[in-house]
Image 1 (spheres, rainbow, N blue to C red):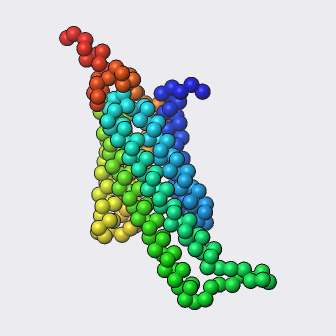
Image 2: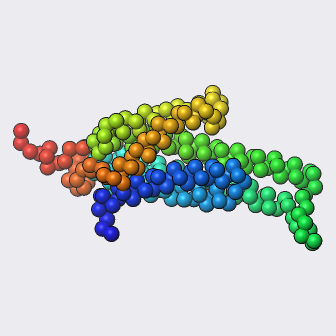
Image 3: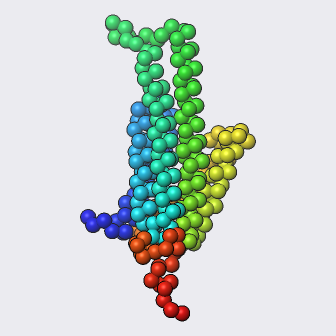
Amino acid sequence: MAHTPRTHAAAAGVLYLTTHVTSVLAVAAYGSGLLAWGVLLELGLAVGCVGTGVLLWLLLRGTGPARAATFALLRTVEAAVILAGTLPMLATAWLHDASVGSAPDGRTTASDGATADLTAVIGDALDRVHTASFLVGQGLVISVNTIVLGWLLLDSRAVPRALALLGLAGGGLVLTSNLAQLFGAIPLNGAVAGACAAPVFAFEVWLAVLLMVRGLRVAPPPSTMRTDDPVPRERAADPA
């Protein structure tokens, strides 16, 4: 398949939807105690983050090179934080396996009480590390990269104005919500935080569908553009 803006846009749309599916399934897996599956799903989520960053950089670098590169970098940072968050979950899974052994007759025997209590404390601490990584990666970082993307889409007119404004507003709302969670003003991952995240969810799903169905109204390649200037150079040079 030829590497065209249309194929890049379709791939980016698929990856955006993939990030949503993997993130939701990862939360469900962790909640069900399927830690290894949760880690695997978050690995897929991280790949999707990097993929969308690179593909949208390829599509939008002609209209705003600096902002497109910033978005791609922030998506990579988000992926790195997500990957870092999988480490305590892996450690929790291994800790649980180590705390329970098999007797010679095949019956499972738990460790003694003191060791079990220590294991529970360590497991709780590791879970909090994962929660912190979620707050930073899928909270603070994603809010900033959504604002950058919304700003770029608004200036480039690559998508409907309402979609770009939704990204700007949603990113700002998520940033405010996660700062409030960071400083204890609202509960972590509570109802308020969920409501504040809804606009970004709507923005990303709308953008994903648009990318797959129509693509973006992208500008010419960077060689014909001024830096962060949405007007093509040759058009700007036309006499009045």
